[in-house]
Length: 157
Length: 267
Image 1: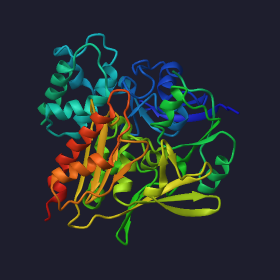
Image 2: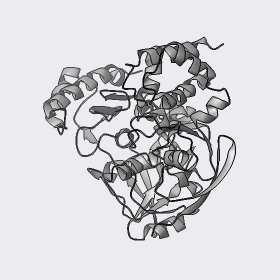
Image 3: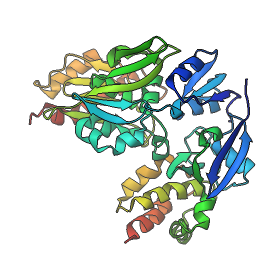
């Protein structure tokens, strides 16, 4: 009963068309079909946040969305936001404050953090922690990550 | 893990969706924030996913005759950000930020949460507390079900396999109404250990049993001590893997105490 379906979507500004199986997750589509391996597959059931990508301007879990559901959507990944320079401040801050060790969570962490940066509001550390509660890091203990995000979020004019 | 194989259809009308739902092994896909994890974990294996997000008219928030209708496809993020909801249904506004995490709230829907009826979920308890009426569409037409009657047991609702929950109607809050939403979790966004959705004297606990539990017999005019005594008699929470029934009952009392001043003080 399973049929492959044709989808067309925009990924990091480029229109792509592919034939996909309905069971393929968006994050696997990005990684396996398009070679965009910045978005990571971690828990594959929505808990760890390593697969966070943007769809039509909003962050979503790449493992909790099917590629077919992204038909007609505008998808942005850590590669796209990195190339456009949108993540530059966060990347610099993460680097300077050593806000990563193994780096597995970092792309998802940056995508979630940038969602806060875009809100252009001053935030407390608690609010930052609440926002990134859906992104797991098993190395850093979060302190340096919160430092890095706080610096960018509260340093904006 | 990866999801098992299934077919996928995205109907453009409700009639077409109801037709597809009649097929063997068909399941509704809305936001997918509970269904897709359960597929990935191989806890369910439907043959056909009927994606209802392309159907016009299943989203949106509107007010008519003191009733706020929230379409089934309205996301948690939309509810969280809605000024109308904040003004007229503060309980829902308070509840939305407790649901999972921003990336999940951007896709998860009100209808999906109500139709799944997870015993630890926020919206079913709110719907019972607020006396919501759920609007259900089937091939034979539409019917309306009171929230209290809609939730029947563990992940069990009044919804038939070939019906779609299309909206929920909430009587909007009056000026003097009091709403309090509280939830205890180990980490923000986790499933509730126990939670309280309270609208005036309608106190509904979740994470406490197979479905939202409306606790009767507590008078807001009495003392908190009396209220906690009544709670002990009326609520018998189901233990989970980490928390005994006694722990949950204690925590339910803690939530009641935290909510008490707001609920019992008149304006």
